[in-house]
Length: 286
View 1 (cartoon, rainbow, N blue to C red):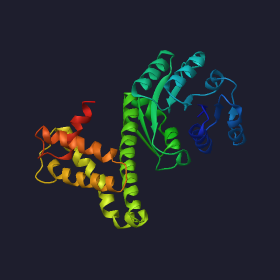
View 2 (view 1 turned 60 degrees about the horizontal axis):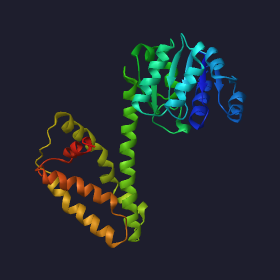
View 3 (view 1 turned 90 degrees about the horizontal axis):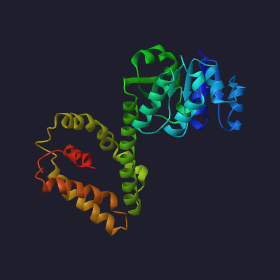
View 4 (view 1 turned 120 degrees about the vertical axis):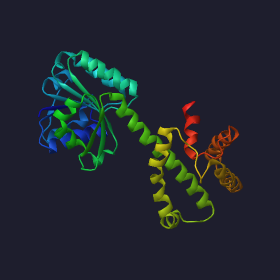
């Protein structure tokens, strides 16, 4: 299957290499020529313009910096787009992905938006996750190709923006967990405790944290938050202890103080017997 790859940054180069390894004829285009040579050595054909790259392919993979750049490339390649399929793997907002998809459709191309959930070296591996949104028949038609980019290619729904939101949600959770871990590491390090020792001894407790997500999700979806144990009222004293200990050691208290404010506000609103999931309402108010 003939594929064009537009954009050869770290991720775009990995995508092109994975497609070449899977046996697909690949034509590449990039604003700067220096990134083309390693792929040309592997067998990629060089295109001098986005339009020329698209004209040489059935499937067009785009991975550039932002949705606005992706739409600019589609405009530049408009004459060659009818009958092609655009697989947009560019980061951006959900609305940007819908705008790009609408433009591709207006130009006579099918469109899928994919959100890559791995780093460049893992592209093409069986465990690499990519979320896709767009017409299911288009995903089914090119599923083999898509799994060459990530073995866990997953179609979510017809709305390309949903794939973006899934990716954002995973990153949102990741940053929250990482920030919590780093704050804890700063606290432990100040006390002279090796962080590696902590992670080894606390591993059962740390590993159990993601197991809470399905329970919280069920409570949020049902909007039923009352719980017989582990209610919000029991969190506040521990948060206060963390803030006091952090302040005494000169550790930044912004993160735990934000958590305290969220919990205290829920308690003031009469939700002391509800689970931690009740705080989703506070985030939903912006």
